[in-house]
Length: 352
Image (cartoon, rainbow, N blue to C red; front, side, top):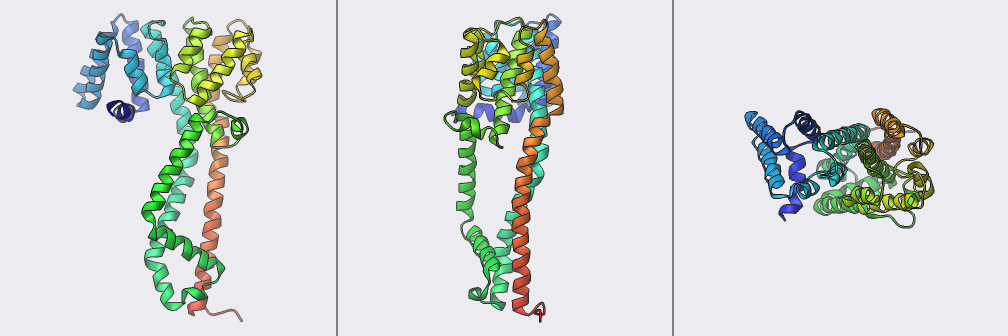
């Protein structure tokens, strides 16, 4: 049970931007000659000095785990997968490089998540607001209209709105539970489904968004490993798969298998045929296979690609457009039903 809540608690106490700052600070302290134990103590003291006591206790717990040999497993259990994957190479990469890499991966992921959130927040908020209005209408407006116009005389659009609103009002708890369960099933599909049909589904949102998020986490971390001097051999791929979702683990394993047969990094992505990590990245990676300073060039490209976040914004915008379309359709039906009822009630003169 304690392990179940460890990750959400860590995210609450140490948000993504705070983790970027913490990792970067640890990298700077390690580069300045501090042992990791002392650097974590400095972070804990600094958080306590700012009265961020929960954060101070978290850093102190990391320090205790370091001393007891459980530091890597603690980070794996509490950090998001994209960041905990970096620490799968703990002990193979010097601390300054390791924490600098974790800071960069967290920073790049924060940009991606922010791009998606900015695109989806308005339509999702509008959908929730529309459902709230429908619930309120069932509790107040519709009963008043039923006094003026018997329900059996309500025409098609008005009857459909009344039925939907009444169902939402009478089964609020069931609707909420169903919504939560549906969201849980969708998240499970996004992270676990890897069989037949997933490659096709990955061309459409929200699966295309999940593919890019999972794939770019793998790609960013692989670039950090290359920059730190690690080869993309089987051991490195096992590190990359260790904390990945079942879906990402399968996609990474396919790339690993093609590289084991002699293909380059980009060529292996092409041969895998999954569009993973992202269709926009694969041609660039394949073009730089075997090129001198290819890893550095890829890192610069990844930075620019993430800064623009064009593919993520486009896919999120497509999903947002669909949501806006649903709201517009529902709003049109509701307005038509309203005027029809007002006409039947005599509030609006009937057309000759």
